[in-house]
Amino acid sequence: MKKYLSLLTAMLLISCSNSDRSNEYNPVESELAGKTYDYLLFESEQECINAQPDPNFFLNCHREIHFVDESNAQIMLTDMVIPVKYTIEANKIVIAFSTDQSSTLTFEKVNNASLKLLNDNSVWNERTGESIWD
Image (cartoon, rainbow, N blue to C red; front, side, top):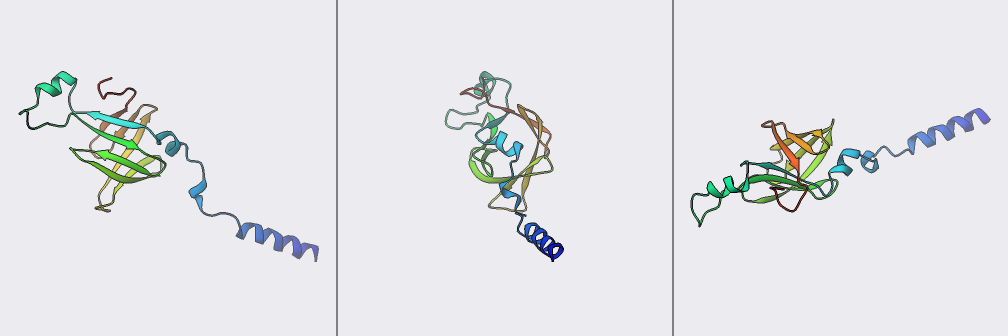
């Protein structure tokens, strides 16, 4: 009887284990939350200013992604900030656009301060100051 009771207890413990991995600690997600990464389209602020074609029209000087929390981010690829969802899949950061679920961007962590956008191999660096030029 003790054998069956032990087996029953073991089965109950296994069946009651939390198979939902959403509460597990993911160091990549935790490291990203609150950080902003930039890809500069110009080498310097002055070069960006010089490239402006018209005082009434402004060319964007950079692209950026800000990781709001462990699943939400905001990305600016042109002149609009777009809210997006992200997930970590096999050490890759996959950005999903709510307007087009089939369209994704995939980043890979290069080091503690850089991400590589695999779609075009551009390297985005963590913003460390108030300005993108710091």
